[in-house]
Amino acid sequence: MKSKSKSKRSKKSEEEEIDEEDYGIIVVHTDTPLLVDMDMRTAIPALEHLLGYNFHDQSLLIEALTHSSYTEAESYQRLEFVGDAVLGLALTNHIFLTYPTLDPGQLSSLRAANISTEKLARVAVRHNLYSYLRRNAPALDEKVREFSLAIRYDADEVPYDGTVKAPKVLADIVESIAAAVYVDCNFDLKVLWLVFRALLEPIVTLDTLQQQPVTMLFEYCQKHGRRVDIRHWKKGVKNIANVYVDGKMVGSGCSEQKEIAKLNAAKEALQKLLDSEPMSMDTDSQRFGGTQEEGAKQRLNELCSKNRWPKPFYKVEKEVGPAHEKLFMCSVQIGISNDIYVSSGDLKSRVKDAENSAASCLLNALLELNFA
Image (cartoon, rainbow, N blue to C red; front, side, top):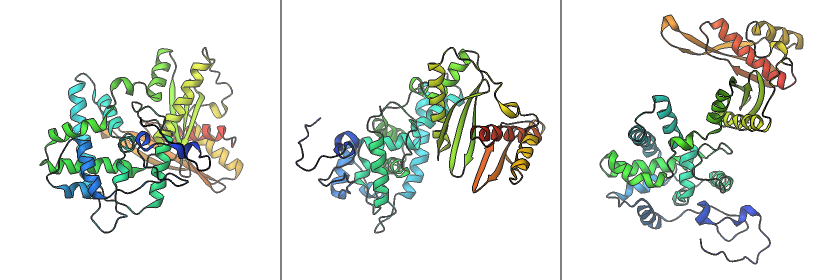
C-alpha cells in the first residue's frame, strides 16, 4: 500500500481518511470524500486491463457503464437484464461441477450467496467500478459512499454480512459488465466465466456458507436437541424477525430487508446461546399459551376487542403442493393507532390451522412489544 501524506487541513473524521485503493472510491481533496466520474477514454483501457479482456466492440462496455440518470446515451438496463441471468447460469455451472454430491437446496444456497446484491456490490466496491460509471445522481453517489465506508473493515470472504443495505446500482454495474463481455464474445458462456471468475473472487464456498449465522444457529440447536423457530412479521416498511428456541425468544432483528432482519436475529440468538450455556428454557412465562397455535385466532380476537382495535384481517399468502396434499400459509394484520402489524405463520394442511399459526405469531410479537 502506498504511504499517505498528511494533510494540513483541519483534522478529518475517520470516514474522511479512507484510501481509494483500499475501499474502491476516489478521494478528492475537499472536506468530504466524493465519488468522481472518469472519462470513458480512461475507463475502457482500465477495465480491459482489470478483466484481462479486449473488447471487439467497445461500445458495449460504454453502454454497460452508463446509468439511466445520464440521459445523453443508452443506459445499461438491457445489459443488466442479460447479466443477471448469465451470471446465475455461470455460477450454477461452477458449483454443479465443483460440488457433485450437494443436493439442489445446497446448490441453490451457494448460487444465491455468490450472486446476491450484497456480494456483487462488494465486488463493485473492491474494484472501484462505480467511479467509471457515467451518471448524474448525487443521491446515489452518497448511498454508494455510505456502503463503501460501512464495509471497509469487513473480510471479503464473508458473504451476506447483513449490516447495511447494498445499493442495487453496484450489483447492476457488475451484471452489465458481465453481459457486455458475454455479448462481445458471441455469447460464449465458457469465455465469460474464464474472464469474469477472477473479478468475483473470493467465490463463496460451502465452508464459508456454513459459517453463516442462520446455518450455525440451526446446527447448534440440532446438536443440543433444541427446537429453533424463526418467525417474521412487519411493522410498516420494517421487517422484524424473532428467533425462538424451545418456545422462548432469544433473538430479534429489524430491517427493511427480510433476510437481513433474519440474519441479525440469528446472530443475536446464537451469541446469547453461546454466552449462557447451559441455558434454561422456561416457557411458563409465555402468555396466551406461548407459541401454542390452537385457539390463537380466538385469543387474538379477544385481545382486539378488549383494546378496541379493528378485527384481524387474514389472507392466504401461499398455496403449495398438489390438490390432495395442498398446504396453506396465511398472514394476519391488525391496526394499532397509526401502525399496521402483519405476521405470517407456518404452512398447514388446513386454512384454519394456517390462520391460527399466523395469529399465534402475531400474539407473541405483540407480547414482546407490551401490547398484550
